Image (cartoon, rainbow, N blue to C red; front, side):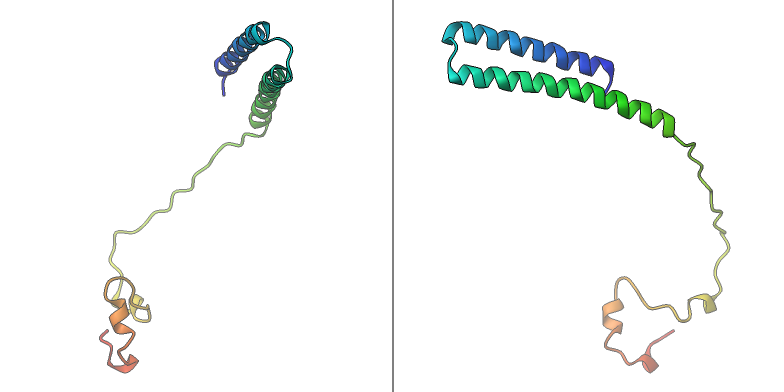
Length: 108
């Protein structure tokens, strides 16, 4: 969340509070209007806390950012010897059909 986003939130909540004040002028100081005003103020307080939390998060992230290192693993293009796969279980398509075949009669 950047400063422009937070500024937009502040602008919107200010506009909301202005609209609530206009409603209060129309409907008077009723219980319902007090609840609406209270809700709008809570939203404003939430936006203020959000701004503080974002600033803290940015400061914390900047302070704890570690350089990312990636270790590349070289994979050989050379083929594998057939013995490499000798004791490997069959997987993938058709593996279920081998489950019923006695171990001695399986093709290798």
